[in-house]
Image 1: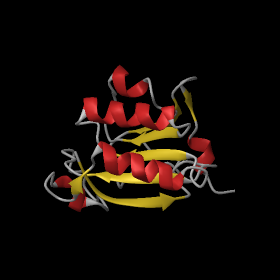
Image 2: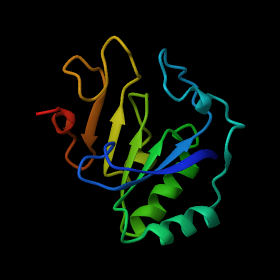
Image 3: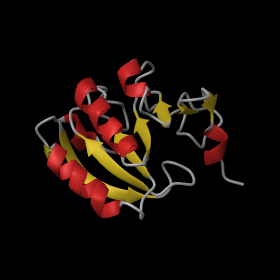
Length: 149
C-alpha cells in the first residue's frame, strides 16, 4: 500500500483537522478526476507501520482525524491503519468512490464519503451529487455540512 503524500486538510471532514493520506492504485478512473496520478499503484512510497506511527505521534494534539483518500483496495492494511488511529484517539474517515465498504473497514471509521465522482453531478456541496458523507455509527448522511451558507 503506497501513499503519494500526506497533507493536513481542513475542509474534507467538517470541524476536524485531518491528516490526509492519498493512497495510490485507485481503479475507478473517474472522468474528471483531479488526482489521476493516484491511479498507478507504483506511484508514491510504501506506507509502513513505522512511518504511519511516527506521523500519528508527530501530529497528536494538532490533528483530530486521520483521512484516507482511497485504500479500500487494500482492505486488511487499511483496516489495520484505521484501528491504529482509533487506538491513538484519532477520529477516522475514508473517501471512496465505491458504494459498499467491507465491515472490517467500517468498524473503525467515524465517517465515510461514498460515491464515484461524476462531474455533471458535482461534489458534496452540490444538491445534485451522487456522493454521500455518512457518520458511520448512526448511518446519518451529513452532506448538509458541506453546503455554503
